[in-house]
Length: 327
Ligand SMILES: *Cc1c(COP(=O)(O)O)cnc(C)c1O
Image 1: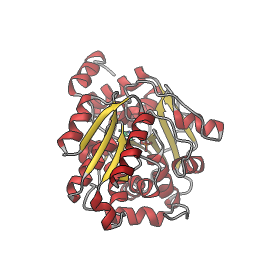
Image 2: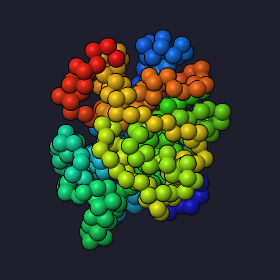
Image 3: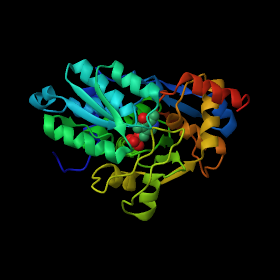
């Protein structure tokens, strides 16, 4: 494994690797957000990615870089849903075995989606840490390769392909708003976007319950953080002590991680559905949630919001939309 820092050329190499497995997603103008904020705002619709979330980029980037012999033995992942689904999807496309360890908090819609892709699913761990221990033990026993959800250079490079696409689709962008969990997504976008446009501002957003990366950045080191239930179920989880990639890259590339509460996330999901005709899960809507609060000083003149995923139960989304008739 290379120790050299991740660079634009790594992200470009990832883009070439994953071309057959991940789509280039649309960058859709949002007239409603643009009118509200008085400047052009675009939505990067990773919710339209295969599997309904961007994580297929990182998973494909890493799995396609494995030596043939390792790849054939199979892969294993721990996930709050979307990463497991991405790994299962890529494994199926490549015809290799996949095992996915989920926690009991994962919504049924996400468990079912991973099972439907033919992966072996374990969904009995109490939290991410327990699921990770379970996965590490099984990886050892069965010679499977562990595919980290955010802390691997090939995974970060894969997520960074979104940054390449964004600046290709709209070179005038000066601000990108990005949901943050373990930080692999915003780290990758930071590497690509800052190489192409050093002055670009990256604003991270996460939910205000146990915002792990936010607390680590504030402390200047990795601190232990809990894991509370939230509508943004793709975002929680502590940053492991031995983190090598996402935390250092977030320190380098991310100016600020803003926090949004559950009510703001609900409203953003309703806004996306009613005003943008876009389905978003909670974690995919935190960027819009932050913009709707109007709490961002100096927003910049040309803004893109990464809308990361759409894996939400339909009944839940409709119930939320019904509570917000005029978001
Ligand atoms: C994984 C995920 C995120 C956060 O990505 P990180 O790389 O963990 O920061 C955001 N939104 C959705 C929908 C996700 O699945």
